[in-house]
Length: 323
Picture 1 (cartoon, rainbow, N blue to C red):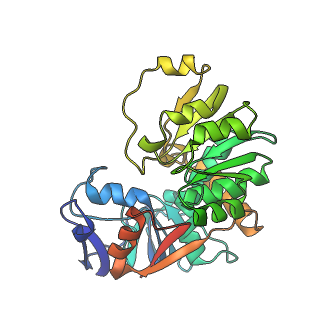
Picture 2 (picture 1 turned 90 degrees about the vertical axis):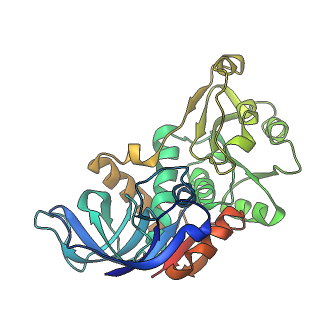
């Protein structure tokens, strides 16, 4: 048995029940992890509310870090005592859990469990956005919405390190300071400024090579007005609500733009890709290029408070749960 946060009926924060859950021995290709830290992400809200359906009852969470305490008969890459981290299937909001071997990576001793749990989903997301979906190069101009958020701060740091000119949008002066500290050269307060007009001013009308948008409805279609001809709009989240259907003709009118809606789990579906992405992420975290700010820590039993803060957009950086 283990303590876990389980959802029986999707809904508000009251849908999260802290209770005992059975944990069977690991399957042939699974490892069993005693979790030391658990990452909290906006995708957890989508699952909790039913926006992303899952068979009930289910344990929330897709991200964590801990120690291997048991291995399946056919596990090849891990042994008891190994430090591991993952961004994978549901089930992270628990003290103990089983994970497919193929979804886990080894966590170097130089990276703490809390950082490991906070960086996997957001960090791997930033990795594929910057290095695969649109491969940012020196001299590119990129726009990062929600630049003080978990993914946003990583995009700003890593984008600057790659030599890009980073423009960020945020909702408050306090968040503007965080975005600038993370590497955004220019920060736009989207609640009081027309961000598309400000982007035109900042770039002298040259606009951006790519826009990274985890906000969704509130920033569309104005984001398209920030992109230079043949540039790319990358919609990787919908914190303000999903983007409604739109006329594809807009893309030709605004300069033959490219639009994509990627997901992390498509990019990490192949084991070799996951390992390569994680290695690159851990390298930039180890050498200090990217710092993973942890803004709040909650006990696993108090996960509801973490969700309230997340939904109220009262958070910056990353939130972790401690079993």
